[in-house]
Amino acid sequence: MDLGKCLTLAPEGLYCPSGDFFIDPTRPVARALVTHGHSDHARSGHGFVMATPETLAIMAVRYGAAFCATRQAIAPGEQVLLGDATVSFHPAGHVLGSAQIRLAFPGLTIVVSGDYKREADPTCASFEVVPCDVFVTEATFGLPVFRHSRTDLEVAKLLASRALFPERAHLVGAYALGKAQRVMALLREAGYDRPIYIHGAMERLTTLYQEHGIPLGEIRKVTAAERPKLGGEIVICPPSALQDLWARKFPDPVVAFASGWMRVRARARQKGIELPLVISDHADWEALCTTIVETGCSKLLVTHGEADALVHWARNLGIEAEPLHILGYGDEEEAPLADEAA
Image (cartoon, rainbow, N blue to C red; front, top):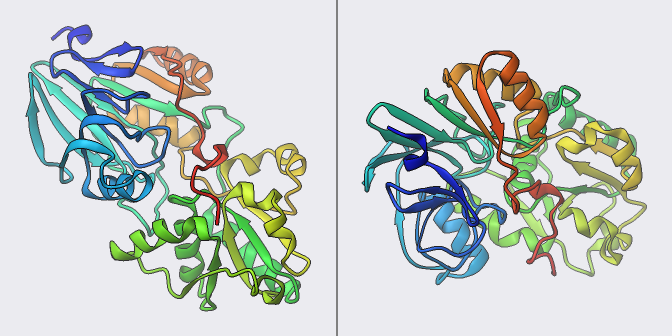
């Protein structure tokens, strides 16, 4: 079947003409399939949304129950016929409920990855390789310089700093959806059993994770009166809060930031980060390349990020490849949050 009838690029984003739906559209549309709950992929105002139950729950928390006119939950691996497209969702390993979207047509299979990572994560289902003819991938960290560290070693750095400076609060900047809860779970896996304190902007999403059975231990919302008394404690907050007056009320805080971008030391220095933690919810260069090969695709489309380097690598491997440069997608970890005030 002709690719142009199955998937094309429209002003709203990726569009399937034969099924008459969009995938992660960047503006309101009649029918949207959504890979995950981050705000650059999941927007409100659509007529119809199909997503995993967890993603629908996340969208309801972030945008309110009326975020779309109608919705349909789809379980991992379940097949639904939309026009000529047989659609199924498969784990992407990015955040709770994140999924790749597989579109099957006679003689052609397309997989749209959304954002993904290959490293194990205690807060979401692990990435599943889905064989396909056309693979549509992200490339947030699509440069050879990006090689993510082992997360257990990064968490060990945080705990070692806390042991070295027991009188100082440790403020960890982390995106409110996914990264924050992952850091909490990783701390628990490392044996940390103290209460973990959180910024108010993270409370609703953290509660949602707990309601979905993710064990995070004792989580406490920081109050204004408590801040000067939290020496020796770990406090997780949105990255923007690290620069706010809010952060200055803690006792001599050690400022940390959990992000794949912390591999770039100049960026850490620029942001005034004392303790950079290389913890990413995106695939690094090696994981991107490995995944592309494992899908067995003959054509690669790159939605956003460092697309040109990944396209060049794929072409040298004999894979037909091109960048899409979709505007509106980006690194959620750096994006300002609408719900950070608390």
